Length: 120
Image 1 (cartoon, rainbow, N blue to C red):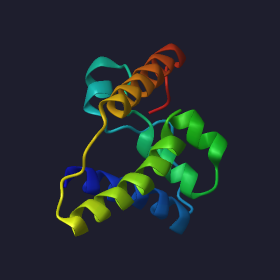
Image 2 (image 1 turned 45 degrees about the vertical axis):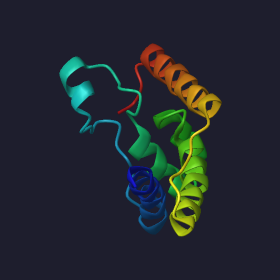
Image 3 (image 1 turned 120 degrees about the horizontal axis):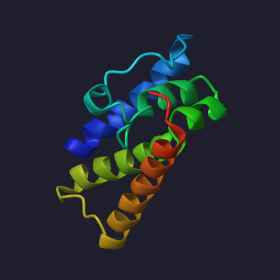
């Protein structure tokens, strides 16, 4: 259930970006981890990235968060999987290698953001 809500949130941010011409700002953040430590969390910049992606600004999307475009694609695929699992009345199963790969991608993205001083 939580995965479905996260998928809706991610795709909603892309849709909001497509529906508006509001420009994400580098100067604004609500990330509690970043506000306390001054360092980006693994998800810092993701909302900005998804908004920029919705506006067709792929380069800005990657600049805000290197995993932004990947998250948008995964949200669509996982959203479809959640719908299918719900219709079948079965829980969504996560293969361990897929979870390990996702963890590694997140760790590499976070390391990259830390070295770049990542945008909020």
